[in-house]
Amino acid sequence: MFNPSRILQVAFVTVLLGGCAAPQTRTTTQTTGPQHSNPAPGVESNGGTANNNPTASVPASRSGFLTRNGVLTPDAQAYARNVAQTRHVPLAHVENLLKQARYNVTVARLMTPSNTRVRRSWVTYRNRFVDPVRIKAGAQFWREHRAALDSAAQQYGVSQAIIVAILGVETIYGRNTGSFRTLDALATLAFRNPDTARPERSQMFRDQLADLIQLDNRHELNALTATGSFAGALGLPQFMPGSLLRYAVDGNNDGKIDLSGSVDDAIMSVANFLRQHGWVPGLPVFAPVDLPKDAAKWVKGGLEPTYTWSDLKGFGAKTRPSTFADTWKLHPLGIVDLPDEPRNTLELRSGTPNFFAITHYNRSYFYAASVADLALAISRRISGTAPY
Image 1 (cartoon, helix red, strand yellow):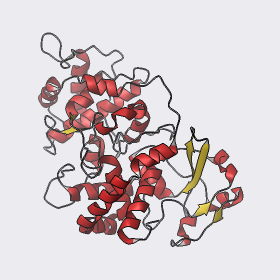
Image 2 (cartoon, rainbow, N blue to C red):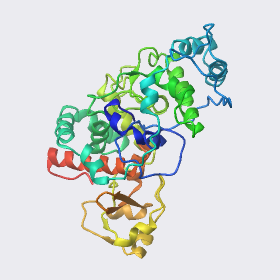
Image 3 (cartoon, one colour):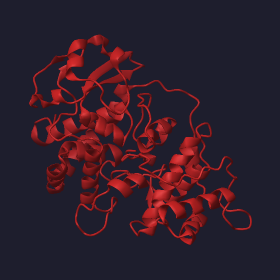
């Protein structure tokens, strides 16, 4: 889930976008804030079918994606036909939207990969998001929207604290949702993506652009006016269009979904997304265990837990007191590595399926661990108790 307030961290946007794109291996090299919003929600490529794949993209004008004669470039025209066919949207409607899309030089600049590797720092990352502003604002948000949060917890089994923390990390409860026109951002990254070394990035954004067009055709949003992050994420939870299309929920039962204007919709949508991506009601985010110092050698990465409790015991893990029942021992577990290269430290935790559900929102162990830690801090501010 992406946000222009994180401009200084864009060197790692392409890593983070994995959370909103096709499944890929997990990485902890991303040391910045979320830019989604879980393949986002994230930002997942949630079954996009706009799969035209021209081998050579015809350069578009800097003002749009038209030739000098005012018609779509061959690349954009082929894409329009593909979207019309696969998404069952009238061709004229697709063409009309694409003709009004404009190349955004700022989006391209912010999404240009950096040639400089920044050392990973878990401490710096965590301090950015588990901060007094978000803790205070999160507690206030929880008090003001307790009924909706309780309803989401009851319906989906997702912790209120986790929902609150995600909205805090993503946009500080709607303060920073982005002002880039989504149509322009997605078209820029679909047809003029600066990451030329990875053509799959362009395809991912073409799929998200198709999702946006489909939502517009269904009158679920206005593609000409919708705004969000520089990578196309929308609303309080910074859902990419594909996640909005597949996981967003009408939380206030008014017959429409509005992730920018309805807090209830945002709350219920986050809960639904997590439940659909493997959240197990009643489990903690981290297993209450102490891992041996050499457990890093068993880190597998990825977005799914692969060990059993018997495996971890064999590695030397030991339980510690917890308010949770031991049912977490019946579920797959993973070893989570949180390195801080500048400080030469490494924190290790054991993630349950609920930790990995959060990584589907954003494919970064740093992100998921920060959400969990912020949830803990906010919960303690509210009631003095821990949610996990």
